[in-house]
Image (cartoon, rainbow, N blue to C red; front, side, top):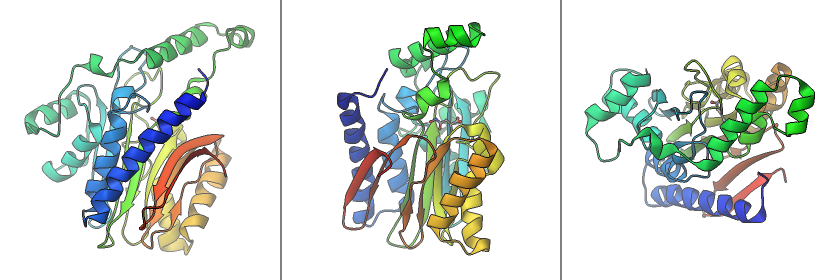
Length: 305
Ligand code: SD4
């Protein structure tokens, strides 16, 4: 499927709705954490993104979700991996942070933690809720590609690499800075099409997919998770600012355009520092993104300027 102007308009509209919801919370004196959760929930409820409703399929034909959440004020964090029955994984990740003595819960245990909460914000759904034809077809294409081992057949079938195919429509993340100088960050994803053996990506890994520290910045990542874990992308950006005297701009550019590229990793980040500077660095052809400043000035787009 190609990006049509209609589809592009749908993405722009949903991103705008999401960022406006977060901005409104902040404008009314709400917390960065509330803004991040509200923005991400809107994207999770949309079939457009690879998170919540629109999550990609695993090799076994189910949807398995990862998410993480971090508070830059206390460095508290929560995350869940391989959840199959929770409508809004970002809210569950936040609950792991606030309502459990742990940071990262996985699989059936994480699903049962969700049930145990009995919270209206943590809706339990059947795994079938996450079915979308578009993502299911995408899995079928990838399975066909896997079967057709030689390159000629792959080319003839015109089956794109699953990551390249899905990366433009992927993982969702959000970072926010509130009036009290608190930074929060969160990330939510279905992972990668055709993931196997309980594979977990970078999105629920604090320091890779998500990081927030009021002293430096907040970061949320999207991309080929294996590389983001190896490069510790989100924490590395923060560390370069904390110990390496870099600006946010310098740190994100160094990590995404140099360190990650050297490893062969593709993807990008959204990041925001304690002064409100914003960076949305990526080394792919495009990355859907939006930002809004204090005055409510909105920027939304996919490609490089
Ligand atoms: C992962 N980083 O599980 C995620 C995938 C992603 O857009 O970002 N897709 O590796």
